[in-house]
Length: 279
Ligand SMILES: C[S@@+](CC[C@H](N)C(=O)[O-])C[C@H]1O[C@@H](n2cnc3c(N)ncnc32)[C@H](O)[C@@H]1O
Image 1 (tube, rainbow, N blue to C red):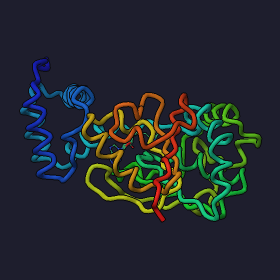
Image 2: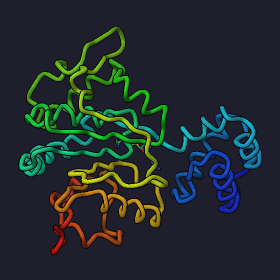
Image 3: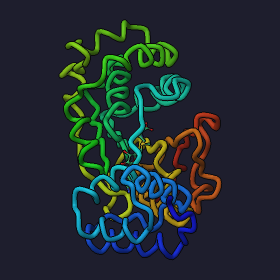
Image 4: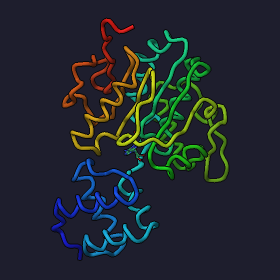
């Protein structure tokens, strides 16, 4: 039986220990999220007390690695929230078409489905050859899978439906090759994607980005950390650059909310206002 009274102090001490020993900083993640994931790991590992998890994390790197995977939550899909991609096609692509080259940053790209979706979209809009997509995450396991571009065949029915709902007009199967129970994404989709390990909490800005997509990531951070990461995005975006958040995320409580205008309120697409006097 797991002791239910895991205190905030217990959690803080555990997160501090993880940070000191491994450099992963979960100290400003939402307490509710961290608590759920810790309890889940305790159940799976048959541990009854928070002190057991503390000593396992500190003395067993394989256990610590499992806990990082639990805490990072890599759930994702292709053309996730198809209406969002439809809005990208209708409202954002016309803006991107005005640039001679386009830098896109997927922050928290997980296993890459979002970046492959963007590659498809940019190919279909005739923009891929002038696009570079930075796809970053702090979870190296997820990034390795993303780079391979091999996904389960079982997901393709759902992804095809998402693609069609997003306004895709081709046959989705032209973007991959089936191989038994997997599919391999076409090499041409990977050509302009740069995969990189980047931690939003501890690493620095990417320069001169035209559009940042950070969807379903900030939801796991507390308000202070959300504000910190929003500053990173603001610094990374060009004037008039575009910021896309997840369906449950918002700029409302951000210190920078006044610095953006809404392009599509429902789909959480925002445009950085032009700063006067900037060259
Ligand atoms: C739920 S997934 C979202 C994936 C994708 N953006 C989507 O919407 O489908 C959240 C991702 O954020 C990543 N993440 C969490 N904290 C991070 C951090 N501090 N720096 C970089 N990535 C982080 C996780 O590893 C995970 O892959």
